[in-house]
Structure formats: C-alpha cells, structure tokens
Length: 599
Image 1 (cartoon, rainbow, N blue to C red):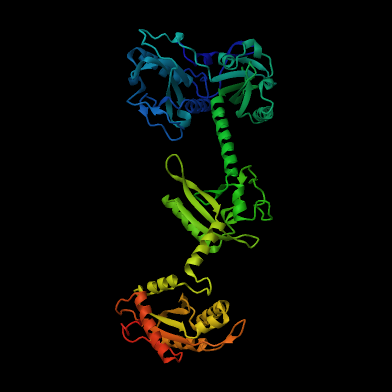
Image 2: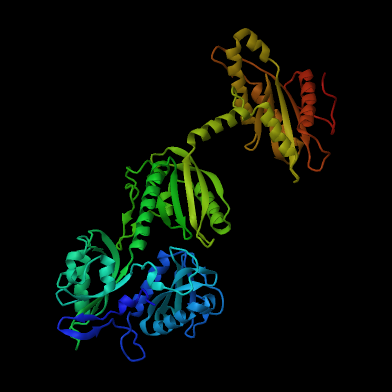
C-alpha cells in the first residue's frame, strides 16, 4: 500500500554527500533520528487541510488512539466529527491493519496518509490523514477525506489503482547562495519540474517579482539570526502559472555534515483563492455601500467606528469636502501600523443636538444589549448653522455563534418630509388667521387637563366679541381679519405663561387655564380680558372699539366628572349672562351644572 506521504520520505541529499539524508529539524523518532516534519510545519499542514476540505470527517486523538475533544485552538470549517471510541472502529475490518500501520508511522514521521473504507460507506475509498500536532495543540488529529470516485466494493483494496492525490507538502535544499542542491519527489509533482530542471538553479528565479523582496529579507534574517523564517509567496510552476505557498527556511549552514538551507513548502493556493474571493466580495460591498443613497455607520461593541461611507458625511455634515477636519477625506486615514483610522463616533455625530445624541446613545445601548431594532429621528445643526433632521435605523450585527459584534446604522435625511409633517401638524392644530389653537385642538387640550388625576383645578374663559359684526360690515372682511388677529394677541397677554388661547370659530375664543388654585384666579384673568378688549384697536384703516362678553367656568379636582364640551357649555351660559349685562365684565358659572345653555 502506498501513501501520499511516501514521497516526503525521499532523502534530500547535498552535493558531495550522496549517502547522507537531510531531514528537517524538530521532533525525533525512537532511533533518535530527525522526524520528517517539524511540529510547526505539521500544524500549518493541518490548518491548510481543514481549511481546504470543509466536507472532511475529523476527530482529535489522545496518545493511546482514543477519540478526545478537539481543542479550541484548532480552527474547524464545518467538518463533521468522527463518532465512537476510536477511529479504527469506524473502518471496515479488511482495512484496520492499514489504520494500525498509519498510526505507528505517524509516531515517527508526524504526518501520514493512506486509503481506507468506512463502515458507513464500505464501497467508497477515503483518504485517512494522521497529523501529530501534540507539540502545538496537545492532540493528534485524524482527518478523513472522501474520494472523488465511487464504485462497487472490491474484494481486496488496490490502492495503487486509485488516482493519485496531488501533494501539498514538499522540501528542497539550497546552498548558501540560494541555488537548489536537491528536492524531493513531492516538489517535482507539485510544480511540474523534473529533478534535473531545478538542480543548480537559483530559487529567486522561481519567485514572483512582487514577492522577491520579501524572500531576500527572509533569507538575510535567517542568515543573521540563525532562526527559521516563514514567508508566504507565489512560486512559478513549469507551465508558467503561479502557486501560493508557505515557505519555512531552516539554516543548517556550517553545521557538521549538513551545510545547507532546508526549505519546507506547503501549498496554500486554495486558501489564497478563498481570500481573493472574499476581497472581491469586500470590494463589491464597498462599492455598493458607497453608491447607496443613505449614510452607513458601523460600530463595534465598544462604540468604535468600524466603517462609515462618504454619504454619511454629506448627511451629518456639509459634505466630505468641507473644512471639517478630520472628516474632509472620504477614505479613512492610515495609522502607524497601517490599519484604517476612522473618526470617532463623537466626531461623526458631533452635529446632533444634545437631545438627539442622548436618544441615539440610549437606542444604541438597547440594540447592543437586547438586540432590539431601533428607528429614531434626531435633529442636527450643521456647521453652516442649517437645521436638519435624520432618520437613524439601528440594527444588531451578530457573529456566527450568535453573540453581538456591534451595530450598523442607516442614516437618511428626512428634513423635507419632517417639515411637511410639521406643516400638516401645524395646520391641524392652529388657526391659520390668528395663530391660536383651532377648535379641535383647544378642546382636546382641555379634555386632557380634565382627565388628570392630580389635585389641579382647570378653568376656561369663554370670550365673545359684541361689536365685531359692524366692523366687518362697514370696513370689510380684511379689517375684520386684522381685528381678530389683534384680539388674539391681547388674549395671549391676558393669560398666564402656561395658558392656551383657542379660536372656537367666528369671533368666539376660549382661554384654557391650567393648574389654578381657585376660581378667583380664573376671574382675574377674565377681568384682564375684559379690560384689554375694551380698549381701542388701531387698524390699518381706522381706530375701532370693541366690547367682550366673558363667561368663566372651573372644575375642581375631585369634583364630579365633566367633559370638555360640558365645561365649555357652562362657560358659554355664563358668557351669555355677561352679554345681557352689556358691561364687558366676566360672569362665573354657578354650581356644577350652572344655568341651562342658551337656545
């Protein structure tokens, strides 16, 4: 039976020493000879194998071969676990000797592989890898890969008839000038060269031009420090294509019986292809986010800015090209270590009002702690002094395990819609002519006051203008409208700071009195109204005089329940009594019911 690591056992020889085998430094076998691979190389091989084969079966093994949990330091990529007491229990009886042979070999070589059939799928050959990562992770690792072909179960395994698996690990030997002294069979298979193609050639010629500088730096560091140097680079195949590999250079120069540099090579092309695919996806995502008509702000759990697009600056500031440093540049700056340096959250959101910032921080805290989505509207004042309003939609970001990793906020300028909404609310609340509350609004405010459960007393002053119709008839409606506006101004002066003035319709007004200690306060307001409205009014056309009929009604806390309409009717009855007196003096409604409304 052959294995995919037999090629690694080929002795790599130095020029002038045909009978001496050169092996990597590291763990030694029972005879005291160096093992085939260093612990670091095997750990890298295990990582690459798992990364490239998410469909593999995997298990951790103790030194006695029993299955044990895989430690967290071993990165898995969705592989299924091998169940049971030991790996051999899952293999068909005819292949269990193969498992025993591989287990004995891995103790010496550190990394072995062979073909076996599993009880769960006895008609299919699988590639079983044993990797000794005890020096790094404290366990041995078993990785079983499915074969690419399926067939009927054979009577006897014939591994040599199976298609060979391309090697992923190789070694070469170089002299002090970087020329190849020897290589193993895995190297020639991996890159397509013959043994004669590479002997005596400079390894630098096989490196990608963009990577040659790093290779030289690593070589010089290895010579100066006598420590192994690790480099990831692209190496040329014979067909002219490039393969990404991890290389580890070991300095054996000037050592008795050696005098060479040993280079261990691991194929990481699958990993790099995955990284390139991720980079392409990241670039696509970046272009999409930059093109989106909304601002984007990503924060981690510590409130650090992870990402923001240029449109966020256009919304929260006067645009990325303003003098607002450090936000003038669209792209983040680079720190000393080369990482992107984003503005702080406080800087990015610095145009929010104090109330807006407090609302955002409270909403963000809830998103990060409870995972509850939040949609808020905040006000901001730009550097130019312009008021704007933004809708901020804050959403939780989760890692694969479900834990919160941060939050993403979409920011949309809703200033125009906010202004339109405010205008609609204003029209629904205020009288267009006088600026007072309209009938619906003032009665709704009165009803809310009457529904309070505290000890406050509520009062109303009902006002009707006695001499308004002659002004309209003789001077015209424009003069009448001007007079109504002046009346509303004087009513606001007559009331207190917390009182509201509403226009019930025509020439009738209502003053809502909040939190009054007793009816006497309401009557004082009524007298001020009578005095102010009894004075002359200077119109654009001429001077006119008015007189007001005034009714006052109050509802004390704890009194019988009364609605806004009922209290206004009581004040209306009292106002009618004032009109009959024709003196412009307020009348207080009598009793909880008061006189009957006028017909």
